[in-house]
Amino acid sequence: MLYILAAATLWGLVGPVAMLALREGIAPLEIAFWRAAIAGVLYAVHALITGRWRLAVRDVPAIVAFGLIGVSLFYSSYLLAVEAGGAALAAVLLYTAPAWVALLSWSVLRESPSRRRLLAVTATVAGVALVATAGGGSVRITPAALGWGLTAGASYALYYLFGRRYFSVYPAAAVLALALPVGALGLFPLVTFHSRSQTAWIALLFIAVVPTYAAYLLYAVGLRRLEAARAAVFATIEPVVAAAVAFAAFGERLAPVGYLGAAIVLGGVILEAHGEGGTVGRTGSYDERDIDRDG
Image (cartoon, rainbow, N blue to C red; front, side):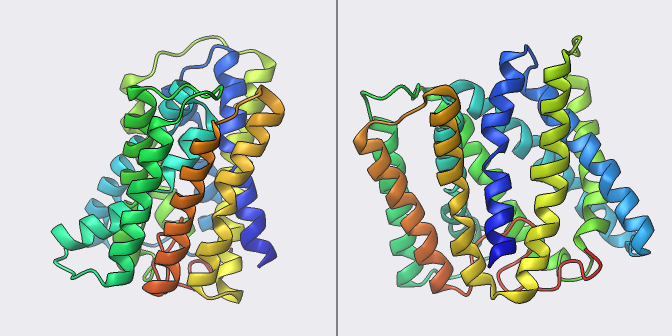
C-alpha cells in the first residue's frame, strides 16, 4: 500500500511543479518533451541494466502508436490543461479516464458495461459537470482547461486498452524505453526551445525523474503486493495531492461545488475499481501485477 501511495503522491506533484516551470517561461509542450526524453533515457538504461529490453518486432508498431498517443498527446494535453486551468482542475479531469475506458471498451471492444460501470461513468460525468459549472474559486474554468483536461483523461485511458495487451507481456521498462523516446520525437517538431533558468531545469529534471521514472517503478512494486482494484483506489490520492500542493504553493482553490464535483469524480473511480477488478493503471491492466519484476 505504501508504494502505491508514494507513487500517487509523486504523480500529484507533476502539475504543481509544471506550474513552476511555466512561470519560468517554459511552454507546456517543451515541458512534455523533456519529461518524455529524459525519462525515456532513464528507462532505456534501466532496461539494459536489468537485461529485459527485448520486444517482438511485430509489437513495435503498436508501441510506437502508444508513444504518440499515450505519451505525446497525454503529456502535452495534461500540461496544457495545467496551463489553462491550474494543477487541481487538470488532475481532477485526468481521472475521467475510467469513463473513457468504459466508452472505448463499449465502442471499440464491444464489451457490454455492467450496471456498476454505468453508474460509475454517470457519477464521473456528473462530477465533471459540477466542476465545469463551479464558480467563485480562484481556478480558471475555461473551455480550454476543460477541453485539454478531458483530452488528457481520454489519452490516459489508452494505458488500460494498451496495457491489457502489452504490459502483461513485457516489463514496463522495456515498453517505456521505446514509447517515451517516440513520444518525445512526436513532440519535437512542435516545440520552440528557449533558454532556461536554473529553476526551470530543476523543475524539468524533477518531473522527468521523480513523478515519471521513479513513480512508475514504485507503482509496479506496489502492484506485486496489492491487488489491482485496491491499488487503483489508493492511487486516487493523486488529485488530492495536486490540489493540496497547488493551494499551498499558488493559492489555487475551487468553489465548494467544484470540490463536490471532484469528490464525485473520485467516487466514480473507486466504484469502477471495485466493480470490474480494477481501473485504469499507469503501467498495467486491470489484473496486471507483474509489470516489471526487476523494477
